[in-house]
Length: 145
Image (cartoon, rainbow, N blue to C red):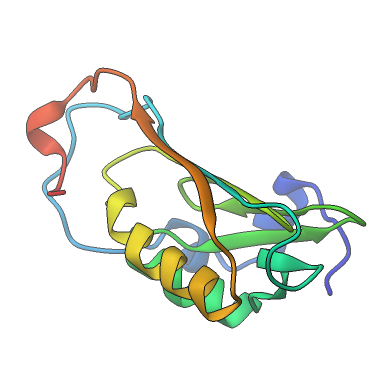
């Protein structure tokens, strides 16, 4: 696992084209789309392996997040939580809880089937699921779904 590196230092250590490269071609926005989209999932405690969703590999998270058109920039693993700084916000993974926040024109809902599939493969059962978002500044520039 990588050691924690402050975001500015991580960005400075990467070539500019890696940090600034667009994930997908899309029409230019008239400004930054800041309101976040959030998926929060609680899994039934005591069901599945003790490390629960934390057993999902970095490579699997990379593949899952590709569906939302965002990437992991920085990863930090602590005793009870894995935190990821994404190109479009954040991902927090605990044994029986997941929180993904994205902004911009990400397609966050497209990760949901992939996350649920990974959880099912681990024997986890969903206890509660919530998707939320604020009003978009540029709704016509959002991609479906």
